[in-house]
Image (tube, rainbow over all chains, first blue to last red):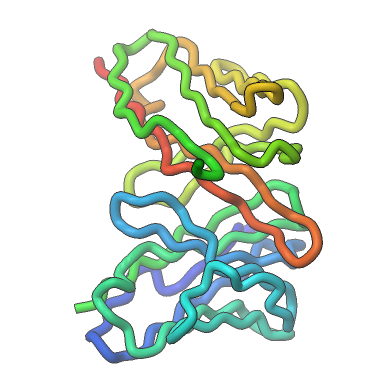
Length: 113
Length: 112
C-alpha cells in the first residue's frame, strides 16, 4: 500500500507562474483533502473533494486557487499567478470515509521566487 | 476563542521523563479526536485516535475530558526519538463538510 502520493515534492516557481500540485489518495480512500502549512504556522484546511465533486472549499483563497478530483487520475491543486505569500508546504490527505482516520502525503513544498 | 488550542512549547525534557500536553477545543459536539506527530519538514503522522474517554498505546496515553473540553497526551519514559511537534486535531463533519481542525502544535525536545 503506497499511501498518499504527492508530486512533485519540491516546486519552485517565479512570481506570476502557475503551480500544479498532484495527489493520488491511498488505495480504497475516496475522500481527499488539501491542507496548507505556512512557515511557523499550523495546518490549515483548504478543500475537501470526492470524485468529480468539490464538497467543501471554505478554506480556499477566493482567487487564483482551484482544486479538482477527476473521475480518472489524481487530484490537482492549481495556483495561478503565484505570489511570494503562496510559499508553503501543501499537504494532501485522504480517508476512507468522513470522520475516520486521515492519512497525509509527504507534501509539496512550493517556493515562489 | 480558537477552535483548537495548544501550548506551543517548547517542552524541553530529559530522557526518561514523563511529559503531558493539553489541547482544548471549542466545539462541545465533537466526538472524536486525533493526535498527530510531525517531524521537521515532514508530513503529520497519526499517533493516536481518541473516540471515548481515552486510549493507550505503549508509552503513550491520550485522555479526553468532555466536561472541560480538552484532550491530553501523556508520554512516559521519553526517548530522544520522541522529539517532534505534536498536533491535536478535531474533526468536523456532517452535511457539506468534512475536515480536521488542527492546533498549532506543541514542540517537544527530549534532551540526552
